[in-house]
Length: 154
Image (cartoon, rainbow, N blue to C red):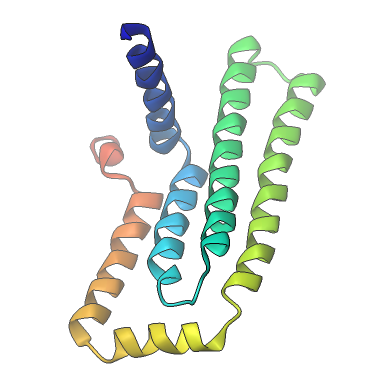
């Protein structure tokens, strides 16, 4: 049981590393939070939510693999090497493919105008909710581009 808990600890450490060191991972986490927040305004089936979760999980998992490839390549050689460049480019390309596919899936899932109207009415109808949404956008921007753990460096 102890080794299982250690395994989870290592996995969470890897996720934390990605979030702390990779802006794109922070972008993915912010998009995930907003997608899940806004999904409630749409009439999604269980299958729609399953597809949404698989899509989100796929993009985030590939971003983590991309980070692992980059870290390993940087450790192997700091010199320019065509094989290392190809490995990094291919891993980044895999994330891009998943992200583009996720946008296409989102267009299908979030293509219902009634959901957008529900969301609009929910936020416009209550200034406090709209203010909270706008504040969350500012906090998200800071989290992505100027994360608090890097404030000491500036």
